[in-house]
Image (cartoon, rainbow over all chains, first blue to last red; front, side):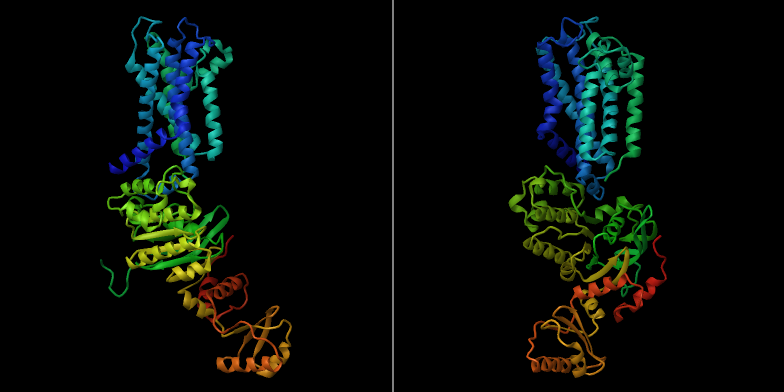
Length: 246
Length: 337
């Protein structure tokens, strides 16, 4: 237990003392929320853009932490030989992974609280586009699946690519999924073929699931569950099979 | 335990170890042992197979053939029970770049049930003044000393140090040497690699000279130096002296070569009294008004090393008596594909 807690403390410290990571996980989501809810340039298709933005940016937050922050951080640790060195300590891989998972969950909780508070301040009315109710438990389930899927993608890349290549690929992927994932721009605004492609990606399934559960208080579609579920199983599995520790 | 008191069980055993990377044979039938409180240096040029060997003992690599054991355990199969008992210093890196020495040592200390005091260890390796400086801003020597401290934090019974003095300044080297001497005193077995002869000579009780993945020699630094010594006398004087005349003056069975301009090697006949030979040499030089620069009758480890590694590439007669037996052993092994 003590090794896990010590590792967790250091992982959390590194996240919250690293300016780039903080900007990525909190700065960008909060700025996007403030900017696009005030400046109505996005085709959100609603008279209250903040209603569309809060669930979408929660999805963005999950992606930024589970895929981008975890993937880039782990990639550099691998490049610096940290993962190799930890391999000959009694910490062990399960506890290292456990500390990273707990750190991701902790960061996401902070993100969720901050984004919900900022959203409410900006006039977000959860469930306004539907019956007025929200499915918080369903939203949490969607976020857990999204976290597993994106965490798997981040570790898959971190364990295969050189740190700087990994950095570039993860950031590119982040921007592409941000634009194509229905987080800021509704999929309906994309060309048909691009929307179809996007629907099998975890980003749009996560965003769509959050829009349904938090935006309109409606059930998450079977397709979203399926897409998220498949990614949540496949990505960590492939990462586990291909991860190179040095 | 069960072993007899007069035959201490080796702490580290490397037996006919072969490591292949695809078609490349990095380690080719290497065997050596190390005991508690013994400092063993694997000495050889870059690419000799030193790191591959050490990383196999640490459990990072799999032996292609042969076997290794550390504290009687298999480094891969018994990984979980072995890692709390060993300390590892990688050739480079291995530390979170944004953490300082104190933070990293406290973190690692928490991995172990029984660890050294991190604050005392920071001072021991002389990093007290930079204990909060992030690793990436430490000098190369400071990074090395932190890695060394991390190898010791878990009170290991065996430590593996891959190039512990590489990139370390002279003062840092003194610290590293003192720490290794301290390990020996406490009965810790130290396996280190180096391509620097002077370090091997200073640090190690026993040196295993490796090249192309094979053991060329193994002994104490002093015995290695003596073992390949052929009784040659080396001296310097003006370049281009008449070596033929010198041979005539000294007697037929003497050999004289000018190894490089102005540097000569004189081989006295077997059984000759060295002081007499030196006296005759000095007299001959004096008669001709020649200066006598360096004059040395023994051999350094460096010369032994060069004699050992230099002759290893050729297949003809061994260069020194100390190597006969070992060369015989090697002849039986298969050569790399």
